[in-house]
Image (cartoon, rainbow, N blue to C red; front, top):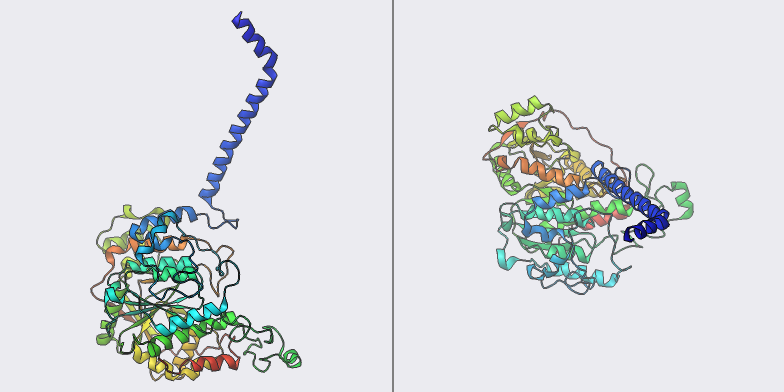
Length: 524
C-alpha cells in the first residue's frame, strides 16, 4: 500500500519534478561552463578588455612572493587621514606616521596594479592649505630619520626621486630601495610636483634611511588658471600666429619653432627637473657641504640591490681610468634586456657554461632564453661613451662640480626650444659646457623602467604589472653575479661627431625662459 501510494505520487507529480530536474541540470551545466570559460580567459588574458592586463593576477602574486614580508607595508593603501600627517591641511611636520602608525595596514589590501593618475579625494582640495603645506615643507627642510641614521656625510650618496601622481610605481621603487645594500647611509629626497596626502604618508613611512620631501612650488596644481599653469588668456596650442595676433592672447608673440603655443603639462617636467637640481645642490642646508654623487631617479624606476655598490665602483674606476667621465648611468630602456645578442638555446647554454656553470634547469621556459645570458655576460662591464640624452638619462649621477658647469650654462638650458630636460641638457653639453658630457654606462643595468604610461607614452592598458614582475625576475636571476669586484671598460668611437639636434619645440614662451632662469638664483 505504501509502495502504491508512492508510485501514485510520482505519477501525479511526475512532469513537474522532471522539469525541476531538467532546470537544475541546465543550471549546473551552465555554471560549470561559465567557470571554465572564465578560467580560460584568465589564462589567456583580457587582452581586448579595459579591465587590465591578463597576467595582473598572476604577476601580482609573483611580485608579492618576491618582496620580503616586512616590506609589504609599502605596497598597501592606508585609510585616508586628511587631518594627520601629509593631509590637505599640510601636516606631517613631526615626521609622519612612522612604523608605529601602521596598525591599519593589516586590514588593507595590496595595491599592486597601477591605475590612471589620481586626483585629490572628495573633490577640489583647499588650495590655500596646499600652498601653505608646500611652503612649510620647503621652509623647514626637515630630514626624517636623521636621529636614527645620523647626519649626511659629505661624500655619501644623495638619491633624488621626481614624483608626480603614479603612487603604485612609487611603492615598488621604495620597496626596491629598501632592499639595497648600504641604503641606510643615503639621503633620499622626494621631489613632488603634486601635493597629495596619500603620497605624503607613503614617503613619511619610509624608515630605512634619511628622508626629505621638497615640493616644486610652481606646479600646475597650485596654478590651475594662471602661469605656469594655463590661463584662459593663453593662446591655444594649435592656433595660428596670425589668428593669435588678432585675438591678442597673452603669448601671441612666442610660439615654438613649429608654430605651436605652450602646453603647461609638458613644460612642467623640464621646469621641475631644473628646479630640483638647483634646490638640492644650491638651496638645501643638509647638502651645503656635500661633495658626493647625486643620483636622479623617477617614480617609475626600480633599482637592483647592488646599485650603491656599483655606483661607488664606477666612481672609483673613473678616478683611475676615465678622467673624462662626468656622468654615471645605471639604467637602460631596452625592453628585453638582451645584451648578449642572441636568443637561441645553444647561445644561452654556452653563456651559462662560461659563467660558473649555471644549470639550464633553473631557467623558466617563458623567458625565451633572452634575459639570463645578458646579465651573466655583462654584469661587470661598463661602456665609456659621449652622453646621449635618449640613451643615458635614466639613473644618471653626477657631482657638484659637474652641476656647477651645467648651472653656469643656464641660458642655454632655459632658452632652448625643447620641453625635454634631457634634450636641453644635450644642447647645453654641445654648445656651452667646458667639457662635454661623457658617460660611463653599465651594460648590465641597475636601474630599470617599470612605467607603462607617462607623458610620452599612452597605451590603452596602463595597468599591467608584467614589467614589474619581469624586472624582479631579471634581478633575481642575476643575483649571484651582482656586487662585482671590478669593472671592465669598453670605449666607443669618441671621434665620431655627435649630430646637432633640432629641438622638439614646446618651449618658445619667454615666460618659461624667465621662470627657468630665475630658478638659478641661490637662496637658502
